[in-house]
Length: 211
Length: 211
Image (cartoon, rainbow over all chains, first blue to last red):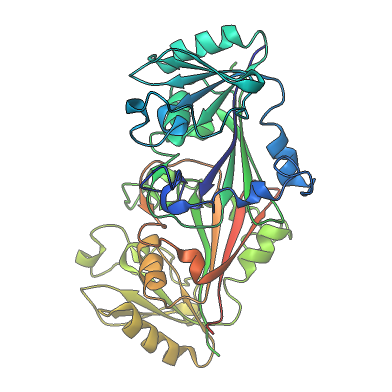
């Protein structure tokens, strides 16, 4: 069965997955790189990194994934829609290596990149986008790549089977909060928390089988 | 040195330390007892309980404390000010066993209870209340007993040396949030996270020595 998964979405103690304002120079606003420092120390990111619990979680990002869906704010800074040359933040060989669907109200033609990533631009509901991505994934899983708004929308629509959040010990105070609109999330998921020596806490949400 | 400490303040994943609405029948609103289930399983609460990590944290609530400061919402449900007979939620022998200061804009005469608890009612700023409680504590520490609003006020005023929060894996969606107004809290505190087999995560904030 093909699952819908979220991985490595870092949040602050107060639940913000990004700071503000987002710009070309500061993709995560005032959060800077502080939400992702835990990942830079893993082998997933750097061959000289640690193979501990942070790495074990981080590695799952890519395992068994056949397609990604991301939000418009993940693909580029405010204004990217007006730049016909914008090809994402990631250079010629983006780290997705699968068909990757960017949700936007202003679609453009697909962009074929090196390394197996093709960006497709879709104006669609979460359920519609998931149907398209699922088909493209060829039996593998679909990753919801973020940002927080898109993840929240897919969770609220009941479409996510597994969600991995990484809680970082900082208080951002403002930004986009993952929890808004998700009251009683625990009714549908088994939730596990594991704190790591790096200081972060991994939270996993596994959809409970329905009776 | 006498410290100012917060213990066993339970919050949801989205940071709410109580649900809503608060009433005589539901002191924690729609949160019910779900924020405190972890504590009911400890020896701190019940002699037949567990002596694991949850208990180790919970026990510190009472150790070395010479006075407590609490908010008006912790002392009683909405309307308690209009009931001259209201003596708190806890019966004749409240679990504080020290002078206990209730912050309120409508003070009343002190209430001497069994077991060493005397409730004093103070209309004062956090710093003023702390000075009074510190004096009464006779060299021991002062506990800021909650609710969330009072804890937040004391933290924001720079008065708290040690704060212990217990993050429970539920999403409440509404209530009183501990994090509001505490942006960049990590600048002043060393923060440690420890997840427990019960499913909660203990967060400790230890004030960093200033240079």
